[in-house]
Length: 136
Image: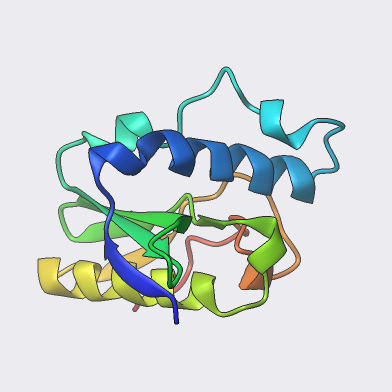
C-alpha cells in the first residue's frame, strides 16, 4: 500500500528525477531521464513560503511520486503532480491530490486548481493537466 507523507529534503533528488521521467515519458522524449534537466520544479517549490510538499512511497519506503500545494491568500493550486510511469493508473496520483486538497482546505483556500505544465488527456497518468477551474 502506498503511503503519503511529507516530502523531505532527502527526497528532492529522486522527486526531481521522477518528474523528469514522468513528463519525458508522457511527451515521448528520447531520453526521459534527461528531460527538463535544466528546469527546477521541485527544489524551488520545496523551500517556498506557503507551500506544502507531499511524497508517495511504496511498501519498501521507496519514493514513487510527489505533489505540492501552494497558497496565495484565498487562492491555491497543486502541482506539479508526478508518479513513476511504471505505476501510472495505480491510484497514487489520486492519493497525492487528496493530500494537497486536504492541505488547501486546512489553509482555508476558497478557489483552487491544478498547476498547468501541459495539457494531458486525464490525470490518471499523473502528469499535470489543463485546469485552474474548479474549487475543492
